[in-house]
Image (tube, rainbow, N blue to C red; front, side, top):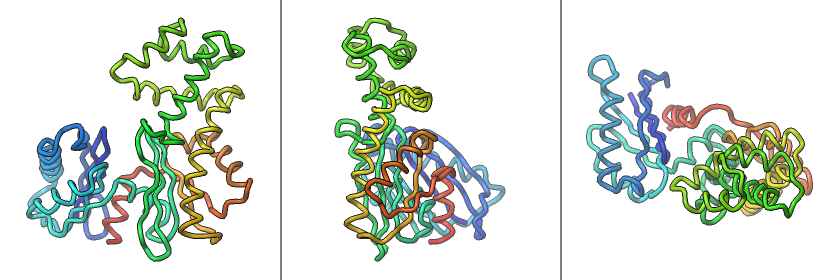
Length: 294
């Protein structure tokens, strides 16, 4: 049997699969990010999660392979994989690989992923892997919930300040924070400990407003997706030229209907030779497919 792990910053999902690719056991636990837990804490967290997964198996099992697809610090996870015993062949990779697998099935193409953060992952015609963006909130993460929330909140605060015509966006800001005063709202995002999470948490409301026709929300969405598509176009131009390729679209932000409409409009002018494939399966399904294929 084989074990697959999808390790993000906030949660880790593990599956135990049989030779046919069927899931025998699964387990979800806390994130294993070494930047948050420290190297020793991240390793111990992973070991504990592996033990908890195997405890669900009925009787002894022989593990022939372990795939670790983990967020952050590739060298750390390679070293950690080398230290794990009794797991057969250990493969480590970036957490972008499962969604790329869902998009392309091991062939050439790319995937756009946007959740709290964002990235573009691609596989070239020669099988080489490439990663663009994913630099974190300090440097933009276009297309992400954080960037969309930040842009829309900035516009909403100007409405509350009185320098832009008031729309439903200002009311949504007040509902989101529970604060009516523009200055207190601004201070809130500079002083609260979970400011980045609160910025990203505003994104669903922005998407709903954009779908309802709110102009400032639509402008915020168009701005963040324009920047994201610009990055993705750079990737396809360098790797594929004008050859059409599959482009997976992953994550709740991009799969929202108003985002899908905006993406298709951006791809149409100027023409972008990609075939969008909107992904609804979770990343752990990509892990399962990698376990079956590799």
